[in-house]
Amino acid sequence: MVPAGTVLDEVVFPIDQAVDVDLDLSHTDASFYYEILDNVVDLDLGLTARLFDGQASLIGSATQEQVDVDAVVPLVYGRAGVDMPFTGLSASVSGNWINVNEFRLIDWSAELNYDFSIAPSLEAGLSFGYRSMLIEIDSGDELQSDAEFDGFYAGLRLVF
Image 1: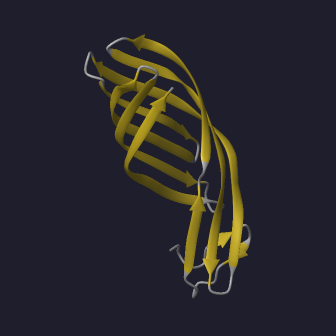
Image 2 (image 1 turned 45 degrees about the vertical axis):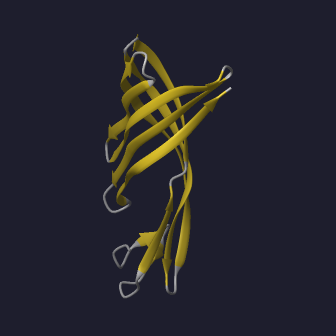
């Protein structure tokens, strides 16, 4: 729910109307980095271009409005990890960050991995982690938003 009296793309949602929010922040990252360390300890630093391709919708009982969220956001990228030799186990923390004027985005994750061989030409890996993304926008009366998305995840990788 959002506060009554909210405006989206010049459409006013009346103060006496409950309003639901539907937010799609689909994105694709292109990261360019330099591998500073690559042995038991991994360290990468670089830049990410995040291409947002989503929508924001406000849905009231009598009014509905939708705007596209299409933007390219430059971010500072970093990753640090450690590999435990001869075990297939590794751990890492990575993140993307920007804080410019009224816009702040922090996106980080921590991950544990286990890599193993299934067959001579088939490698696999399991990942378990936690990811958090915080977006804060405060450009005066035009746009204000505080959104945080976080949670645990699991993944499976297959490499042929």
